[in-house]
Image 1 (cartoon, one colour):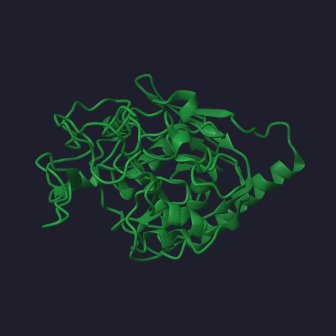
Image 2 (image 1 turned 90 degrees about the vertical axis):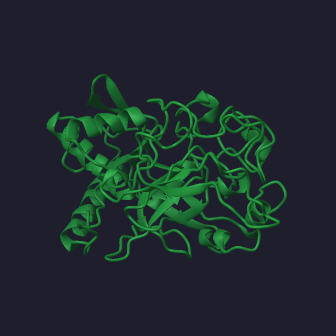
Amino acid sequence: MEIGRIAGRLALASIGALALMVAGVAKGRSDEPKKGDTRRAELGGAVVLETLYIPPGEFMMGSTPQEKLWATGIEGGAQAGTERESYEGPAPRLTRVPHGFWMGRTEVTVGQFRRFTEATGYITDAEKPGGKTQCFNPKWTGYKLSTQVTHPWEPMPGKSWRDPNFQFPLRDEFPVVCVSWTDARAFCEWLTKHERESGRLPATLEYRLPLEAEWEYACRGGSKESLYYWWGNELDEGEGRLNISAVDFLPDRKRKWPLGSAPWSDGFSFVAPVDHFGERGRNGFGLADMCGNVWEVVLDHFDPKGGHEAPNLVADNYRPVCRGGNYFDVPGNARCAVRLGLAGPHYSDSRDGFRICVGPPFRPSR
């Protein structure tokens, strides 16, 4: 899937769809969806994908200097002295999402992605000849910080979403990983066609990756405050809500991930089943695992100066944004405002997955 120029007519179509949706909300039509309404996509084989309606609204995008200081402090555990926190922008800024949309209650699962590949024969970037994906090296024993620094993640041929090298059996309810931005968009395109053919999806909407502004708005769960996490600023209140680096032994080891971690066991040193934490793990919009578990790739191109209110879709050298942190991250790296840029649209990693949304079309052209 090549990233070419953004077609002007697509942009105009997106703006038109947006205007129609906003106008409908303004008129207060009785058939307009309401916060928490659900939409179910039938993928076949009794596999269902559920999305929840997120109404238009506004939020504070980014983080404060105080939040960045906490993230790189003793409790947050993020590495001080890097530019990573600067990606969140210099200060929170009021950001508006003028249209309603549906967001996946959970990250896309292994079982859901399998239905896509069974229906289409799709081959992911990691599975193609010469393909590879970043995976955990089970021979890794530590960073060796005082001598030669070694990292636990290596590019591995022969690994993919079918075998992310976790060292334990893959389960259908795990979030799918080792899929690229290109793979995620292919899943969305298939699901759009599938649901339109079934008569369940109008032509004005499509399944796609969320925009960065949509993602952070959804992550914050309706709060208009600049909070570290969707539940507030206290890390201790996150116990039983998310899967990050915590007091959990690595497979076949008597040691946990080194460096900073949450001071409790969340039950998983790697991925957790989606929505494992139930109601306590869902934010104000009812969305599960918005912080932690796996990084979620979104539609926008990465701007190191901060996220954008409008779609940031460039013509060349696309670097997709990923949001939310993952099972390996320290607490300071799994906040609502955290954002990173991937190496490119075909990059994949056993810490990265995706969540879909349903909304007006915003598509970089091929």
